[in-house]
Image (cartoon, rainbow, N blue to C red):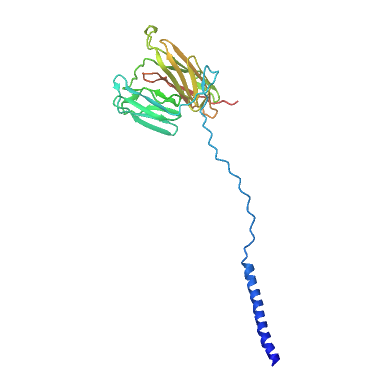
Length: 300
């Protein structure tokens, strides 16, 4: 009886011990599995990126060239305007007529008011060409008047038109000549522009104020030298602007432009060039167009 009592006491203890051991070994894999994985090493911090750089300002061409041997910079005017009167020669100022101002890839139109006045404002930098948009039966006195927008704050450019087949004679007419009417690719041409104040005899005292001459050379020409007997010159790409100032009665100014013919121009091509005379209070006048034929290169 005594042995049985001992067994009854030991047996439950052994069963309890076995249950405790099973419970410990059963939960151990679960605990190990629930442990977080080891942390990966963090990547090094990124180097700070440099701030974006602003684009370089566009090339605006050389400054004015005085007598061909000195160059100075001109600060462009960021906002300029062009205005003037459209004159129907021998008739009246022309109202409600479209004036076209265009450049590389842009174009804008303005109608003249009841007094024939037009105005373009808030213009940026560049080269602009002024033309009249005319109905049939009328002809312009000037076409493709080139101005360098930004050269000065305001341009006064009066434009003219006429009816009929014969153009009227104007008080002052500029002339242009060229060194050769035939040129080879790579050859240098010399254009000579002359303006003389023929408004009256010296005794009349009729000065030409605010005289400006512009010449937009064709793209196949590269200007290499410019000179002027009066005033200052500026090259903006292929556009020459001659700021003459006042010309006394009988006084003349001579401007010379030397330009090289492109090497890739085709033989028998024709190069056409003309200059515009802009002076205060008068209709803009142009030279007669000068043509040069490109000759073929004869290889030995």
